[in-house]
Structure formats: structure tokens, C-alpha cells
Length: 113
Length: 112
Image (cartoon, rainbow over all chains, first blue to last red; front, side, top):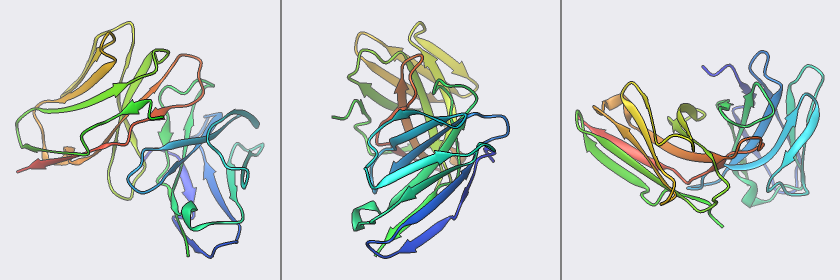
């Protein structure tokens, strides 16, 4: 158990809809990272927050947004969903601003129909 | 542009033998490398890492080798055990950076 929790585990929704994925980092970790893993692909970095502030952005679509709250949990919002957004979404946390060793949650599997 | 490449999608190894997983990178700015292991329905788990100032790092049955001139790293598992069957991801970053760049993974199967 990495100490990172993600909800929900599975999500099935229709095209055009909006969903919110939630992540709670390990106790004491200030950085939260979001990754997307599509079929047979590696993990693609989406965005990082550090202590409530956006720190780095990767290949995140404009339809996607994220935030980190004062209690350090984070939410990833995906809107105007398309079939191609079906993927595993992982959240990870680390103790500092640098990536180094990140601890991953179990992921949320999103299926867009 | 795939900056971190794992060219073998799968690998099968007999239990007790050595497993060698390979990873190549193209970005010469990378100076810290990590291996993650992933079981089905779980998130990746950190396994071992190496800084570019070293060429080898060992942790129990796991050893990572780094060849900077070839931009190549490898993970050796000796001896391989059935519980090592998983997908292994190589990742790279540079000190002070905010993200990990992952390879596409190698599925390792240990044959009893």
C-alpha cells in the first residue's frame, strides 16, 4: 500500500460528459502528480501541483483541469469527454518539489462510451 | 517523440535465472533514472533508482546499470522469482525537474 488513495476505481460515462477524479496523497507529501496511461502506452505526465500551486504542466488537454486543495487532496476534472479519453489515470505524490521517487495510487479506470 | 524507450514489450525467464530488462533514452539532460514495477489493477511501485554520477546501484536481488555514453540502462534481477512477474517501467528525469518521463514498459513473466 503506497498510502496514496484514488477514487473512484472505475468510471463509465458517455461522450460529452464531465467527470472528476479524486486523489489523496501520502501523509506529509506536498506534491501531487497526475498521469494518463492509455492502452499499451507508458504513463504520460499531465500536471503537477505543489502545496496548492500548479508547478508543472505536461501534455494536458485544455478540456482537462486540476486543482489541489488546502488539505492537499487533488482533483482532476475531465470535460467534453471523447472516446479517446478512455484510459487509466494515476495520481502520485512525493515529499518535495522534485520528481525523484513518486508513490502511485491504484488508479482510476475511465471508460467513455 | 519517445525520449525513453523500452524496445522489448515482453520477456519470459525461467525461475532462478537472471532477468535483464533494457531501457534506452535520447535526452542527454536526463540525469536520474528509476525503475517501477506494476502488477495488474495496481499503481506502479518504485523499485530502484540511479543517479548519473554512478554506473551501478544494487538493492538485494535488483541491480541497475547505467551506461551514459550509450544512453542505456538495464535492470538485472537475480535470481528471478515468480512474484517478479509484472510490467516494469523505466523512467527518467533530471534534478530539479518536476516530471518523470516513462517508457512503455516490459512485461516480465517468470516461468516456474
